[in-house]
Length: 464
Image (cartoon, rainbow, N blue to C red; front, side):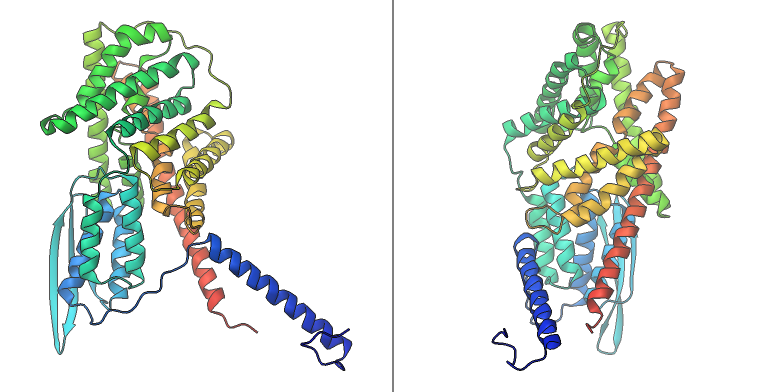
């Protein structure tokens, strides 16, 4: 029997081809409808009424470079995005010097028959940004790369993101910090007796952060004072009761002071030939570790030395996965992760953790970070396409905080300061792990870019 779209006298072969074509079109339209519901769709943007001036474009480039550095992006990625944005706005010649503390950008703009050289310098503010700010900045960068933003409005929106208030109040953020500390404790040192200590010490550091916020002059000394305080409490009251090594109890409570992310970004920059930026971050991150270690050493001396402890039985294999959930909740509350991002944070951390564990079992602890970063980079790019997901940078920053061996480096440095040869060896392994993670990030980013370019070429190819 023929359908209304087929001539009644059509040959059987033509009717079969017609039915297959209709079936294919039906499936294609159904998949497209589902994709429109679950995937992010680009907004329709009207072109600006007038072409922006060179000064407006330069101000926008400077603002974007500074904002990306403030939320923790490596200098090589910042330079790449600046050149892409400049090209989207018709600026072919742009020179940029991107450092962790300053940005220098020069462009050549043509006004009639004259070519003008414009240069601007922007010092970088504090890099203590939240996850919601990182997501908002990445979204703006994506729009600017497509040429959809008016430069003057882009600068205003960047300033609005910087000045935005956190999603949650002080009490909720402090609870989030405690949950974050417990999560890192479950991942680093999963012992049942230590869980209460992780929560109590996390609460102490959370209160100290609130006091330092009310008294800005204490901000500079807060890492040392926090390390000193929790060390004295741990050595005098906690370690003997818990029966665990003091440094492993202390480390989770100091998670926001540990410069693991800074050191990893430094390794990414060094492996990308950003020598000055990477070296300066290495020096800064190492100095932060030394300051924390100084606070621990003084605290041990005040408390009368490290108590004798015996490590108890660890929790089951479920503990690190519970730690992943706790860390994700902690990021949501303390770091003000964007709405509806909790599930995606959990998935990103699970991908990083599982890949890291598999790499560690197959190739050893030093190379485990390579596989964690290699897996999580493509995942965050893929997941960011869904409507409910945050931007890839939000998930990637959370995964890097979870992946980076900053806590292990802190523990190793503390053991080395106490004269342990094992601590020195572990510290060397930590720095090797940093470069392993950086290499995984670079390889994962390159592979993701190649796949995206292949998809673009395939989509642009005319259908037969």
